Length: 211
Image 1: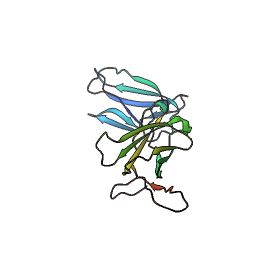
Image 2: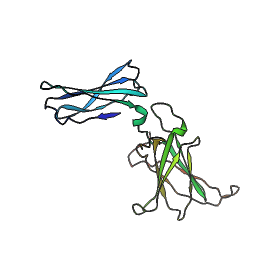
Image 3: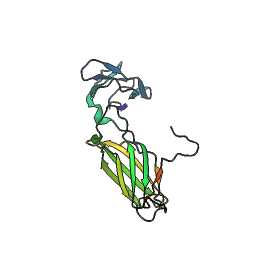
Image 4: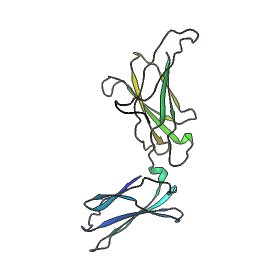
């Protein structure tokens, strides 16, 4: 989690700011472990480990100066309202002659959440098309199956889909996933009523490897 603040409009040159976080039960106080600086003054804080935070936390920024007293700033924040979710995991696409089905795994979050608390966006794009043409943006509610059906449109050119996630109440979208390539394919095959599925996983840039 990243927190940031700006110099006060009348703050002296020797001002120094400090952030502390206290849980709602006032049991534990967490000082900032990693500050971001501007001209030698703290203007931000990065927290790698959020395990010590509760759902509601008291954030306090204080300041010191040899010249004047510095007004503090405080705020009571709900972590769930500022959390940005990672993109869904294990995104796959299976296609037949009529439709393509996108499936994914619910992203990991700081606290366990019900599948109905998620909302997903899918950005479907035909490769080699002009910008802002033949692109589709779909927003859907999370469900138990974590899937979305896409019509298999003509022409059957290669397409990509990428996804991102948000809280269904707040809609603060997280980052996009890597694109997943897919293309509907029809092949003659006995005993399957021509329902041929083609499954492809996210593409990786040259020189990289899957986790």
